[in-house]
Length: 168
Image (cartoon, rainbow, N blue to C red; front, side, top):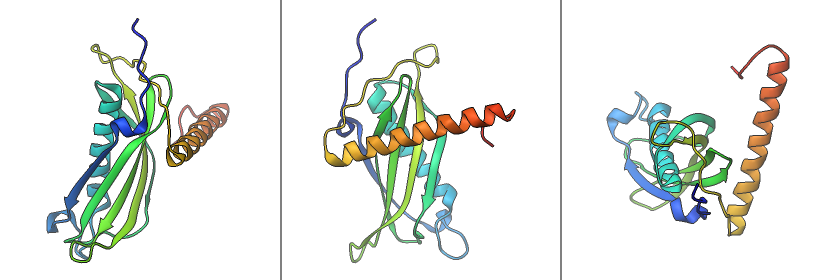
């Protein structure tokens, strides 16, 4: 087996932009949460695929927080990068900014954390490259992601003892 390359978050980060159109919004002119979630999943998948240098699939949206509304005409800037790597899985964090196209004002609108699993040619989970956070911000995100992973494992273990196999 060939040893896996260690990568930095910067090597696989992705930034993309959308404009909110009427079909993306409700009757009040605010973007549907599902539209924002689809864009988040798409950009996070790009990051996971870049990091794994192969196929990676979403297995969980761990957390999504809608912090500010996004309206028709707003530009939506999504920035995503790998926060944490396990053996076959990785957490990708996505920060969504609402940008006023006329003034340039940016507001943090949404934050999400998604878990992906790298797949081999036979569609089985496969080890993914290690992660080497470098900047203070990357290290902070890595440490916070590790806490989320540990908390999720503790929750699953507690639920198992109560007779539930997975959180609902």
